[in-house]
Image (cartoon, rainbow, N blue to C red):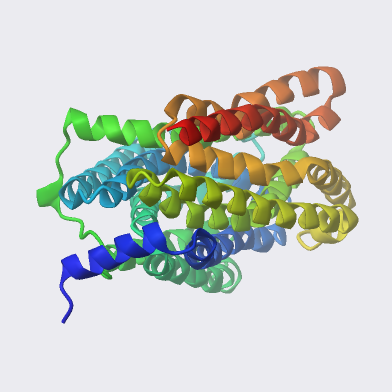
Length: 451
């Protein structure tokens, strides 16, 4: 039987010597599958509840702002610890990787429990803050309740998923995430329609699936020479949290500000009725599904970037960056054309008889398709900056697209163009973020070449 040190040495050699294009593709495929299935089950919630009434998909859209918030915190601990793990393994420092893995995981678990308790105490206040109208509130409350129960499991699963990927165990991570996602897709219609739970059934299915994913990922955490999580290795020291902050702050900025901006968007759209919130919620889910492949490809790039940066092989990092950016750019451009042409048909899949919702949703989707090809470069650049510890630039870029750029676009868009300005806000933010990503990425690549 091969020793752990043998398999670790073998992985190090593979990550630092094999052709980067093949490595990225090999690691990207399971991540793409994971992201696509996760996006499908997120979209399935909206698809199934859209058949009930217009308030139900609007309620899902409102609560999704909360889910983006807890995902932000989970990615802060997950990518913060995982970035250090990949660099530490690249530098042959397994002990440091083991300690920070358990520290990130258990801190996220405890934080999730605290957030869930606070959510139950201030439920209605939180939902109104996230943009719920009084007519949506009963539906949002029913959906939110089970999401709160699942919060610690959702957050901890994201942490384990990131840590496994950055160790080069993307396939193991895929097994845990996809098992829960497929279960969710199966359970959604059972709870929503057969057991007549309505919109609450969608969140109940999500809660059960997340508990299953959590359990499976925890069991798989030490497989394939991976790092096994243990409370004995939980070391909440300043040094560990400093590393988690350096690696995770861009994710916190990106996801956290996205949550705030989505809540702000819901509040502004609420002035134009529940249909406007529902339409934007559907378009967001469609775009999230499209972007899942970009994110999955980027997640294949990240461990290659981290390992080789830790090993000082900067030329391989640059080659992996341009390969990933090029492939995803072609994909985004093709998808933009298809989305623009078939916008009405895509939105009509959710509510075929709601002509107002189809008109608003197709308009928003077409606006997004105009600039969607920029998303690839922004995403890969952000991951590159984060993995190579360009924390300030990575954080600013992460906080732009669905953060302060989107908030500014929403404010001025609504002020001067009303509902049309709200609908066009995300595409405007995408274009502005791309203009920021170009100098940030080029300067970092130039610095690395000089090093």
